[in-house]
Image 1 (spheres, helix red, strand yellow):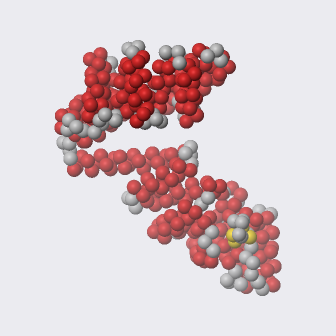
Image 2 (cartoon, rainbow, N blue to C red):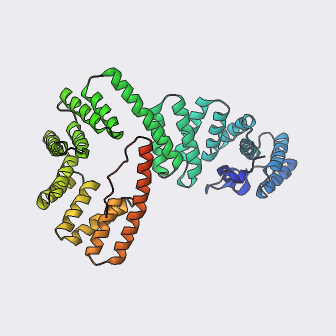
Image 3 (cartoon, rainbow, N blue to C red):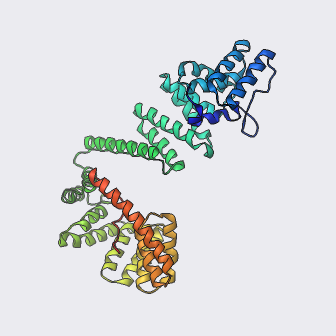
Amino acid sequence: MQTCTQNWAWTLLAGCTFFATADGSLAAQAVAVPASSAQHLQRAHELLVQKQPGQAVAEFRAVLQADPDNIDATANLGVLLYFDRDYTEAEPLLTRAVAAQPVPKLKALLGLAQRRNGHPDLARATLANALPELKNDQASIFREVGLELVELDTAADDLPAAAAIAAQLRSRLPEDPGVLYAAYRINTDLANEAMLDLSIAAPKSGQMHQAMAHELSRERDLKGAITNYRAALAADPDLPGGHYELAEVLRQSAEPAQKAEAEQQYQFALKANSSDFRSMTRLGDLAAERGEHDGATGMYRHALELSPGNTDANVGLAHELVETNHLTEALPILRSLEKADPTDVLVHFRLAALYRRLKRPEEARREVAAYDKYKAIKEQMRALYQEMRLDTPGPTAVQP
């Protein structure tokens, strides 16, 4: 018999009984039972307390032999058999128990048993019903049910449904590797599916060239990306995002003429959409690089009026405030950014410099340590992405 303490489901037998009381705990069925059944039931619960599930199974079977309608024994026996991997016998027991009292964790276990018995449609319905009822303190069960649903939806070629479940999982478990991988896999499949559909529906469209350029940019094929962005804009001069995305690639080029053209493309983007805060931010960056503090500050402030939470514009504005000696105004901006994303290396770098200017050496050293820590992590990620031929997300770290 599998040891239940090695799995989240031992909590299903909390208190060594199954039925939910008013306060949400699990307690024995409060109904009269034959004397012989009561003795077996009491012994079964004692064995559960002693964590001897194999012997408890025999006692629960004895209860059901004398009292087939005893739901306490039915539920507990179903749980124990499930974790002994006897899904065939566990499923009907769990079905009866859920019908009598639909405890969310019990419904989850029933759905998992249905899946393992080769009943995917039944499992999908049961698990989908259980998932929203699982509480925040039931994260491990929520995770298992959610990932099972993702697998079921993916197997049924329903990627949008799988993506919706993955989004729920990420919302509650944002750092879980299994959840993050599932989200990555689904969204990659969705992207590939959309690319295939686009290539069939409109192979010569601006959007097709734009999509190809995006993929080439991720693979650091800047020349190919630039060629496709130009082809996209030639096919559709008003292509949403086209000028901004071309500018982003031109800005990475080693050729001075292409880097200079980036500013013109940002201006084209802003002319096409006066609310394009991303292009405003980049024009602010270019002005800052030339030492045009007033122009840079104006662009950043305008961008933040349209998108107050924009990290790049906030970092740029804070830097300009430091450069123009408005230190106390810059500090709350950077501290807010640090709180929002403690892994942002550029924010730690800017804060370290600011604390030095403010004569606060301890805090400066703390920020330098954080910068070094997260920069090392980013470098590891960059190496991994390079190995995968993918671009590293986020801005390049600034060297101190």
